[in-house]
Length: 180
Image 1 (cartoon, rainbow, N blue to C red):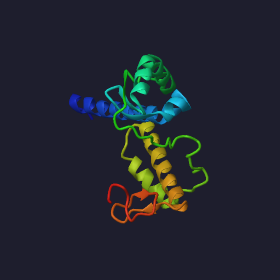
Image 2: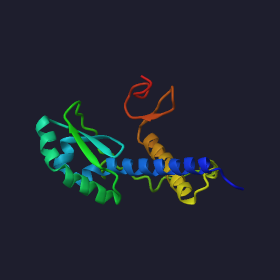
Image 3: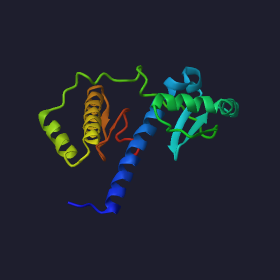
């Protein structure tokens, strides 16, 4: 069966966008490991847009100091990501708040021993069967399994299920932050 050129281009763009977003997400999760504890404590990577990493800093002086070494930080990040994900870094002291780095081993739950039920695995395989690219399919299956295991771990460790959206959240309120 012959595909139309427009369909081929759209499919390729979709795959490129997905892999770019995955690499960008990786950069945000490895920030602390790349820059070290002192810089990480005084900064919060906010988002990546078109290759520009936006980082909030605790004070204007932190923003100024980090701007002086942004080429080094950019090189370290791209080296750790094994790809030129970041083309520019913008530091700002507006609205700084420190997020916990949940990828740090101190916050990382042990989900290796958590089992996925047979019916859950069947559902995951059914969802992934719609994807043609084998590498992408494996990545999707791994991500869904990891998400399911993490949610099981959270429920086992006292996290709550939002009555409105079924999202899982920590705390004692009746709903998640989005539904309150």
